Image 1 (tube, rainbow, N blue to C red):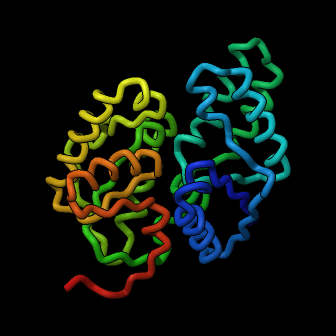
Image 2 (cartoon, helix red, strand yellow):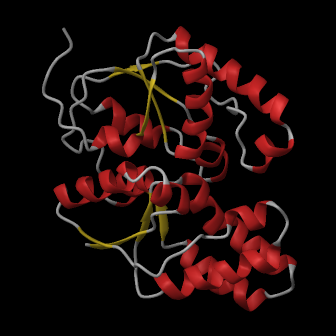
Length: 247
């Protein structure tokens, strides 16, 4: 199968290991990954901030760049949620139903990575091995917008050597929320500290999620607290071939 990689701004600029891991896993499973180099920001920041027209210019660019692909995969639940939900609702809010219909169509072809593996390919075991205790944080966009609950957990449970630690109040927001963290920094930090406390209580040495933006928020608080926790995207764990058991 030919798959187009939607890399996203945050991953392209700061966390290249996550999209690289997506490519490694998909190629390991026998699929061809194409990277359309003309892709830019999907417009999530603009749309979240209320700049609908500006965001829709980027939505139209996304449509044009990816129109020739039947499958589009991304290691970002928040950006996939933008393509599926914000594109359509924003276009229709501005009275452009025709554009909304076009964007709805491309949204149906756009998948978050773990969702694509489990729901489209029907795969839960990708042959990974990772000998660590891991806490999985369900980000708001992955859980509430895309409805991804068991898909990433099923993939993690099939990783050789991995212990998936139960996380208390796992569905609580970490406090990042993009614009929310900028406009409400004190509340954002308080929520992040609560999330970090729950993570530390699991005894995990690695924290993973489907959004590097949330991992950055948790990771910043973790670094300041000198916890020693390691932040990893789920895709990086699925690409791991760590054959050395813990001592």
